[in-house]
Length: 260
Length: 265
Ligand SMILES: Nc1ncnc2c1ncn2[C@@H]1O[C@H](COP(=O)(O)OP(=O)(O)OP(=O)(O)O)[C@@H](O)[C@H]1O
Ligand SMILES: [Mg+2]
Image (tube, rainbow over all chains, first blue to last red; front, side):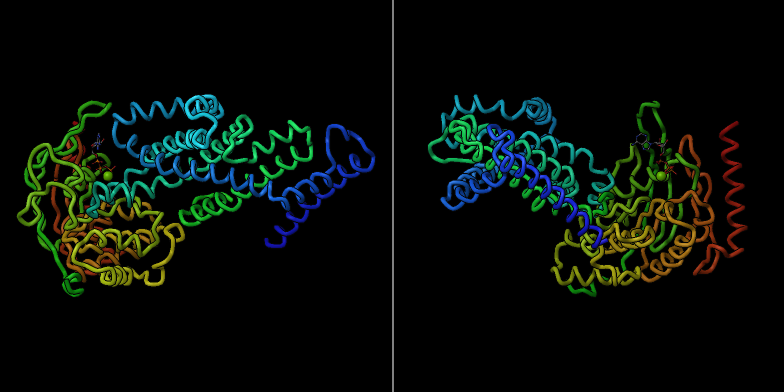
């Protein structure tokens, strides 16, 4: 089993290494396509230099700060709001319907409105991220609560649980699988919309990854464009592998949910 | 409160008075229970048997306080049942254990809602019941790691832990294989003798009812009512394979056929 996995990783790594070498050979050595594609070595050089002069780490920091703050606001507002919707029809018939509609709106579409409302400011960025997260969170929570097996609630009530206790100790944990998938979706929406917003809007208070990408284009610096794209991919992968995958694995292990 | 007091044997008598219950569903009006009268003594083990749809689960839910009767009332000792309460614990057909909690935390769920106990005492009580059902070594296990029989044992420990006076069991062993069931018949009888609970046990397996019950209450449907009551005068502990059960089981089966035949005509 273990050996099998090592072999698979090795295989995967070597395939990408060969592709990179091939790319390096074609572009860097043969000079093919050199006007539209930089060689991997020059992208690497850009990444190295911009790390040393701190532009890249700085941009990552700015972007992650916007993302994390907005994302957590979205989660911590979305879960209780979703619970209100699941519990009270007046919330479900208003906020629930609104969430359903707004979730269908690609979150990039919030950017123009954000700029009109908040100007070219951090608040605009935050707003876009929150809008990307919150509707998925509300919908996932509603779904989670509504699909709880009724027998959990009956069992809890015979043991003397009611009201707030049931919400905190039964409904919240029982809907966690759905909430987690909402968190994952919310993350994806927030991440994409923040990138779009940063590319679209220059904000003087902070220079994020999207803005770096934008200036790469303005300066026609392909190394920068590809280098930042690479960074964006890497962060996305890292969050998935370091945050969501372990959470899901723990959930599966604890609940005994089938799947790999 | 001292631990010994918490672990004291407690029991109650149950008095079901003129209870009726109907449902309005897509199929129309269903009279699930019609004028049920039944007294269950302190520490008695009664089994409700009858064909599907005769209102056994409905009656159990009414006793549990999960549902209200249309008319009539249910008394535990001298108190009218108005809702769920820790004096009556339910074991459902599916185990209903919480997958987000491990074994001992499941057992402690009801205990945590009991005032007058500190966390240490709660843990001791939970361990006591895990020992009683023979699962001392599985306290930290996840629910899905257990077999079906073990899950029902945890569910039993969880129901016993708040020290209810009445234990309500709804086809608790229905989903288990025959061998595991046989084992649990022995265990539940022993635990009942040790803990002196009043038990109302629902099943549609007549032999199981004869094996476990001091009395077997035969229900028939349309509308659900008590057709006949049988006293089972066999000594404990009873074994499900004991031939002595057979004559009782036959008697109840033919009574059931007789009553259902009556309805059909
Ligand atoms: N919540 C409900 N809504 C509508 N009808 C119901 C409801 N609960 C029970 N009934 C009806 O009441 C009748 C009795 O149901 P009940 O579940 O008590 O039967 P049972 O004896 O437990 O049957 P089984 O052995 O199949 O579990 C059935 O006809 C059922 O359809
Ligand atoms: Mg039933």
